[in-house]
Length: 319
Image 1 (tube, one colour):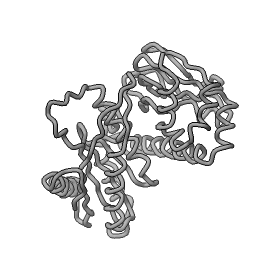
Image 2: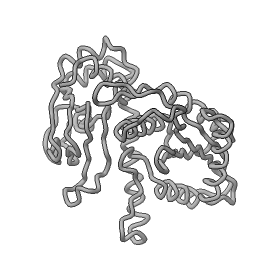
Image 3: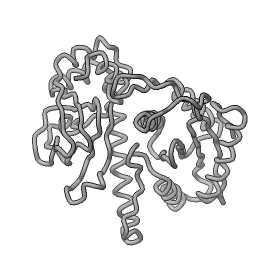
């Protein structure tokens, strides 16, 4: 059983409750119920009436549109993420299957408590709006990808990174190509930020695969909070990420890269056992796309900017 301080700390860092004072969260926690799921157990299914919003304390949930292929979830949810909010918000039945990928601990927040929080806290309402925007954006992108590539991709190549829910390298490349195809050359500026987690200076520090996953997921969630409609982000490989920004002056893109670097450095990443990871730092490269740039040429130029940041001492941004 996870104790109350750890749960409150997790709620404070979750996408739904970020920035809400503990005195506001405490009554919510007292009325909530902690539940357990075994791997493979089903939490929600289409057509049922749902009266709770669930916050993941530990473990991982998969959201599936059908039960025909459980190996390819629509999205993956990790500690701090919420599920069930859509059906509660619109007083509708559930529209997808939610199944435990691993053994899970969840916090079930009742209908009344959830609505009281949204009505009484502007921060909670704004957080909820951001979550809904991200869900709608992802749904639209999946639909667009399916329609655009249905005939070209009979092998159903994956475009989403299963750990973070971000695009993978194939996904962001196709997003870049689609933006160029749908917009006239020269009418929409595009810039790319590439981020890489810096290696620990103390090589004796041992980092487990679990803590790596927690770190990667936390960084991905932080990146998502910086995105506007039309922007997108990807996990390229390992601890390397890319953020594609449209219609911004280069100076603004550079400023966003610096804000991202600074925010990630301040992350407090808590593991399921209650321990806290040492802070991580990231280096970043920034580059603006020219009219004749392909994804590969833009990626190569941004990678060179990233290498300049690394060689200059890490934990900085370079162009």
